[in-house]
Length: 210
Image (cartoon, rainbow, N blue to C red; front, side, top):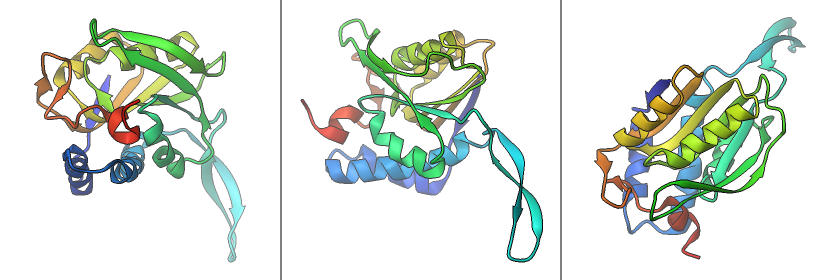
């Protein structure tokens, strides 16, 4: 597994505002989308492209275009939806699938409750979006789900991650083509399985408490 922790000052600044408990939901949503676009730049560094010929106002030249099959972006519901716009802003030709996963607050184990994905992901580059990598349960289950469908390469993008979560993913995906992109790597998990210092429950802060 390849791990990339962003170190751009704009990313750090925006995450600082996200952490602030007084940041209201509309601002939180806007910053999450902006952060995702910045992180998507790093996450798509190895996106597959192929040569294409175009004609400029001056002459013909050869450039590149996104290869087929197109990348698949998979936000983990519900909090991952807040990252989707920022991702497709950068790669608007990507297809979008959805995976509904929730964490059991007693066992911390992931529970899958919905999915809308192609049956065959062979030769697809998949990008999984999940704001928080805490214990690694939900993200690990999502990555495993994609590989079972035939995915060959998965990049996971998270705003924040914990050392425990990173290590859990590293052990689970050993030998597979997985890249993990984080906006920040935090200190630890607390006894409730929340990231410290973290930013609280990303889904609640994006959309409110249901």
